[in-house]
Amino acid sequence: MIYGLQIIGIFFAFMMLYLTFLYYKKDSYGRKSLFIWFCVWIFFLIMVMFPKMIYGLMETFQINRTVDFFVIGGFLFFSVIIFYLYVAVKTTQKKVEAIVRKIAIKKNKD
Image (tube, rainbow, N blue to C red):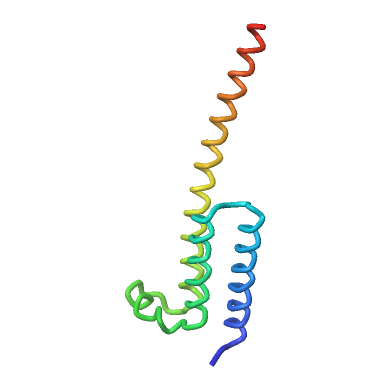
């Protein structure tokens, strides 16, 4: 039996799959990112549709409610995403600084 929260989760997963594909078509990211995000959303969809599949894992970590499991999993997932974004921003910042430095040196010589 599918409950209200599951329906919302299923709708959310399908919307995110659609948005992922839509942004891929707009060339916002490549195939590798498309594959990774599709895997994330399909995994989320399966877990929402069949929450009993994770009961063994929940017992191992002594988590009593399925919602708690998803909240903890979401927190861990977004922590990884935030760390990745931090590293990407720092890398981009260093590249921009190097370009600005080259331009400033070139203009100073002229």
